[in-house]
Image (cartoon, rainbow, N blue to C red; front, side, top):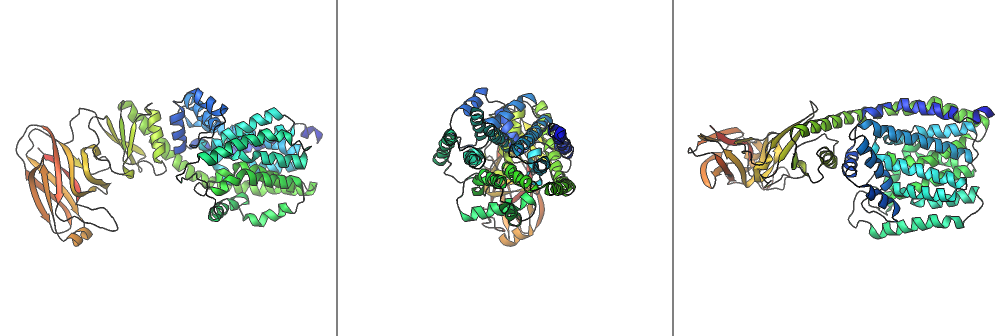
Length: 563
C-alpha cells in the first residue's frame, strides 16, 4: 500500500483519463458570445494593459480581470478562432485543480481512498459542466487554481508564495476577496496560530473591498450586489439543489454532526468563497459553484474518512453511482451545447467567408443571428474578423435605424436558421441605390430613412408619415406599391387612404376598405436616372393595435419603379 501511496499518479491518472473521455464532446462546441467579446478586445490590447492591471492595487468596476483576460490575450494571438486550444487549456487547468485538491486533502490527513472520493466528486460534477465546455468561465477556473495554491502553500509555510498566489486569485476573479478568512480558519484549526502573517492578506482584501464599495456602478446591472432577503432566497433556491442533486438541507446536517474540523473547514471554505454570489441574483449560473465545490469536496472526503469501511463504501458509491449519474446528465447537457456550438460555428464561418469577398466594411447591420448569439457576441466576432474595433454594428432587433449614411460601406447580415448559413447584401459608397424594395430579411434598410418600424413577416409597418430613398432607373414608366391590409387593422380603421409622393410631388392615392394584399401601379413621367425621396402618408393612423403603443400608418410589402 505504501508503494501506491508514494505514486499518486496511479490514482490521479485514471481520474484524468476518465474525465477527458467523458468531456471530449466539449471540442465539438464553439465560442459563447462572452468569449467572442473577450477575444475581440484582448486581441488588439497591449501587453502593458495586463501587466499594469495585474501589478496595480486597483479595482476595475467594468470587470477587467487581468489574469483571466490574459488567457484570451494569449490564445487570440496563438489560435484566433480555433476553438480546440481554448478547450484544451481550460480542461488542463481543471485537471491541475484536481491535483491541487489531492495535495490539500493529503495535507489534512485524509486516507487515500477518502482523497479519491473527494477528487471524483470534484472532477466531474454536473453543476459545473460549463467550466469544462465554455472558455468564458476561465475566470472561475483560474481563481480556483490560485486559491488552492494559496491554501497549499500556506500549509507548506511558503508565506511569500502564498501571498503572490492570493494576489493572482483576486486578479482572476473577485470571489477570492474572503480567502484571508479561510486562511484564518485554517490557521485556527490546523496551524500554529501565526496571526501576524495574515495581516498582508487582510490588507489586500481591505484595499480592494473599499474600492469596490466606493467605485461600484450606481446604475443597477446584472452584476450588481443586492443586499436583500429576496436576493438570498433567489440565489439559494437556484444553487443549493445543484450541489448534491437533492435539497441541501437534507445533506448538510450529516456534515455538521461529523464533529471533524476538516469537514467544518470545507463547509466554511465553500460558504465564504461563495458568499458574494448570494447577493448577485442577476447572474445565476451553475459554473459559479466551481470554487466552493472545492470545500464541499473536502467535506465529502472527510465523511468518507470516518473508517476504512466508510471509505470503501463511499468510494464504491462514487464510482458505481455518482459517476454514471453525472455522465448521464452530461449527455443531456451536451445535446444543447452541441446544437448551440454548431449554430455559432456556422455563423462565424459565414462571417469569415463574407469578410473575404466584402473587405473594408465600415457599418454592419445585423438583421438576425442565431438565437443564442447575443449582440455583444456578434459585435465581437465582426470586430475580430474585420480587424477593426471601430466597425459600427447596428442590430435591427434593438431598434430600426433611420437616416443611415449612404457614405458608409454597408453590410446587411441575415441568419438562415434552417440551412445554418449567413445571407448578406452589401452596399458600397457611391453605388446606385436599389430601385425597388421588398420587405424581406435582406431589405436594404439604409434606404429607409424615417418612419419604418422594422420588417416582420414580409412587410413593414410605417408611421403616419414615412420616407425612403430610391434609385430611379432610366426608362422607368410606373411606380408600384404593395400593401398588406390585415382584417383586424381594417376593422379598426374602416378605411385608409395612402398617398405616395416622389420628391414632394403626388404620384397617386388609393383608398383601402377591405383586407388583403393589394398591389397598385401609378404611371410616372420619363426622367433621367437619379436618387429620389419617396414619401408615404395615410389619413387614418392607428393609435393602438394589439397593445402596440406606436402610432401606425400602413403595412407595406414592397415599393419601387417598374421599367
